[in-house]
Image (cartoon, rainbow, N blue to C red):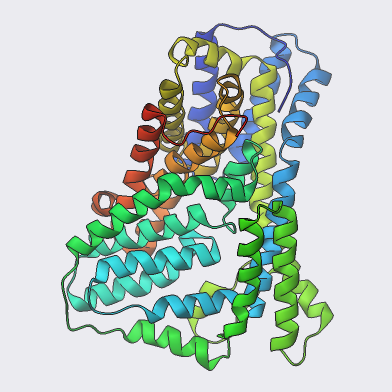
Length: 460
């Protein structure tokens, strides 16, 4: 989003405008229950009128919108490829096989720790924290209730694992969004996140081990039903893991994301043709576009597996383009430069830059209740500042996830907070103390910033 401002305004004026815009979006999302697209469009209209009032030409305002949206072109292509990858991995049995293997390790000992680990694996497999929580998470909640264990701790383990998986999965929209917002390679971003994510995972796992009962008389009927259904419907095959192996090897070799994802799609199509004796080209093409539709007759399985496809990404793609268009106006009208100028005296040290970045991402989550906007607005605001400080963009993309993605479920009025409370049946403030991974991630990322540990320079 490289463009020059046409206005020079005072930081206080910029702050007031930002407060009005973010306040309006927050009200629309939290109290009016609107999808984020509409309030963002209204915000764009408001900024457009503000520009006209300030005597900025309509042509310049239109160029600002186009320039902002254009900066998201790379993200759009990644999102579309991810949509096809998910549906093709469902069709080839790759994701169902991962789910089956994860459920195999569940036992009655160290229950909370196993719930955390299994939901983390499944979250990485499907790239969606909310889908993981609404399916496997609900099954774990019923087992927890049957065992007489704490619903709050179980919910905390489910959410912690699901958001670990969402954060570290190349299939996750927030992972793609964070990397593309600051123009960092997707797999470079994931590798760099490991420095803060692995310690948060290990500490969380140990805490859940300490909280877990040593053993109990478990009833795993719900989970056994899921496993049996996956096997009975011929969705589990050892060779279905081949597409994942190809993807992992290419990612390790730092092959560009588009090529890596395309290879994963092509490999899964090959496995699908091998697995299914009668494959119709039209049906396969429809699956890549519209997504995979599971028809096992088992509601939990069908809900878990029916997803993916290009079409499923259109919500995210349209939101990204609108938010970036709004960001283009924020830059062109001098609002973001003025805000940064207002706090520039506090951004002259690396540690303060990191803390301010994390604080901004967290604040937007609480103000707007939307993790996408937390990532987009924070990334757009601080991207140039990281370059001026000689820091690689992957530091910023990591902070966007550590303090943006995983914080959303901790906000009672956020999209994730409301959804998780509904599906798990536990209030946000009840499970919050036990979402160890979500609580630790922003703390660890700020510690790294304050100490300078594993902060990559531009030349690295």
